[in-house]
Length: 448
Image (cartoon, rainbow, N blue to C red):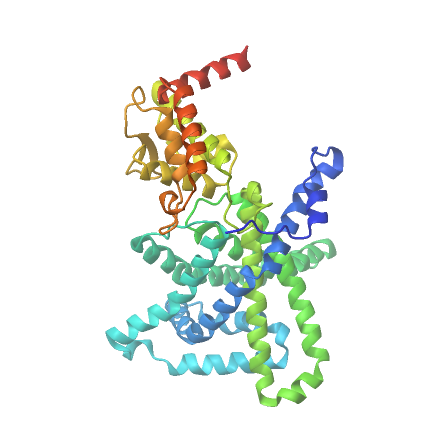
C-alpha cells in the first residue's frame, strides 16, 4: 500500500514544526493538531461512512430498541419522561419532530413484548443490540483496535448500555425535577441570585446529561482502555458541536419552506434521516477527539496503517528484543504491548505488528493473562542477531510475492550474497543477550 499523501501539507508543516514551539503557541498546538486530524478523517470519508452505516442500522432497529427501553423504564416507573426526552432529541426538526415522535410511540405501543415468544424476544434483543455493535465496530476502527471483545463481555456491556444506561439517565432527570419542585428550592428561588443560579443550572442540565452520556459511551464501548480525561474531553467537545448543530439544523428547518414544498409528505422523513446522520457523526467526532488526545502519536498518520522502511523494521525488532531481554535479565515482570509502546513512543499498531512477526518467527510468545505479556521462546544466549534480523526483514511478505518468487539476474544474486555474507560476518558471535547488555551500558552512561 503506498504512503498516503498528507492532507493540507502546508497546514501540517505549521502544526508539526521541526523545532518545538514555546509559550502560548506551543500550548495551543495540541488542540490545533487534534482539530487537523479530525478534519482530515472527515475529508477522507471514514467517519462519514460509519455514520451512514449507523443511520441505516438505526432505522431498522429504532422501534425494537425503543420498545425494549420503554419496557425497562416502565418497570422502574420512570417511563413518563420517555416522550419529553424524544421530543427534546428531535427538537431541531420543529413540527416534523413532533410528528415523528408521535408515530414512533404509536409503533412502540402496538408492540407487546410479552406476547412475542422466545424467538420474537430474541430477534427484538438482536435488532436492539445491533446498533451498539455497529458503534463498537466504528469505535474500534477509530481506536485502531483489531481484536473485538469476547462474546461474554459483549453480552454484559451491551446490556449495560441498553438497559442500565437509560434507567440511570431517566432516573437522574426525574430526581432533578423532584429537587426543583421541592419546597426548599421554591423558597430559595424567591431570591434573585439563587433564582438566576437555578435557572442557569436548569438550562445547562440537558447539555450536562448529553456530555455524561457521551463520556459513558466513549469509556465503555471501545475494546481498549480509555483514559477518563480523554473520554471527558471528547464528550465536552462533542456536546458543544451537538448544541451548535442543533441550532443550525433548527434554523435550516425553519427557513427551508421550499424543501417542504418539494418533498411534501416525505420532508419529515428526510429531515429525520439527515438529523440522525448529524448525531452519529457528532458521536464519532467526539470518539476521534478522545482517541487523538490519548494517542497523539497517531495524529500525523490518522487511520492509515503505519508503513515502516526495512531499516526501521530492523531497528524496531532490535529495540523490542532488547527491552524484553533486559526485563528478563533484571527479573522484572514481562512487558506488555502497552509497556513497549510507551517506552518506544510509537503507535500501538506498529508495535503490535512487529510483535506478531516476532511471534510468527518463533522468537516470542504472549502469556495467557490480561493484558498479554511477551516472553522469549528461545534461549537469549544462543539465538543469534542474524536470526532476529531475518525475521524482521521477511515479516509481512504476501502470498505469491515472497522473496524467492521475485526473479533476479546473476549480478543481483551476487550482490545479495555479498551483503548477506558481510552481515553474518559482522554479527558473528552476537546473540540476543548482547542487546540487553549493550542497552544497560547505554543507560549507565546516560545516568553518569
